[in-house]
Figure (cartoon, rainbow, N blue to C red):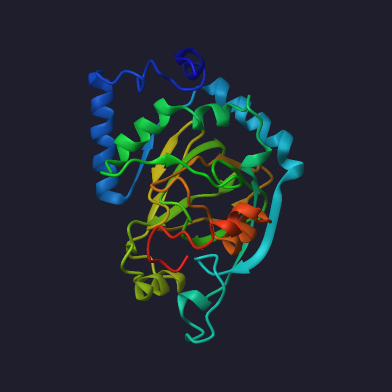
Length: 285
């Protein structure tokens, strides 16, 4: 079992006592986070991670950068195959070029600070309460996408897309010189409504309903990534953007579909194929 001392070395528990369930400070933080999530589908907790831990995670990501799966490929917002029965302008047939990389989760060792944060039941319980969902959340079973590092270098762009998991938690480690701004459209779809018309409007350059969040290193971001269309704008300058991406789900058994895993992480494991037809909702991806 992880000790609180270990968690305290990573998270600013003095400012954010997430381990103290009866703390008024914690209760206020949860309430404020829920308010933000309900209002705009996203929230930020500033300076949540200790600077030393940010530096350690950044060092880990930089060390593993040679093992990054780099992608320069065209795909739709769902990371799914195109549908020839639909018009060429339909979102499922609208391809955008992604240039970015992932350091897959299975490359991280037990001592990884990102693993230590992600594997903490204290952290999972706190995230669940902040989200305010009636169903519990779990650490994701997907061995590649459960808590990867995202890497973007000069001129990279991560186009509009949906996540394969319900909730993503981001920890920015390093900002680029310019660009790299997180943009999103909260709750543009639901488990029973794809809302393709609005998605197409955004893909064609529409800005109504688009929010921006200029994250800072050490910030913790909570986000409804499966239901909110989102992207990261183009990186300008030589400084890379590094971000940690712990992810959570309602169904601990389900994983990304193989096509999604290959598109984002470069490969699919036998378990991805075994669990391919385990669906959490009726959405196309």
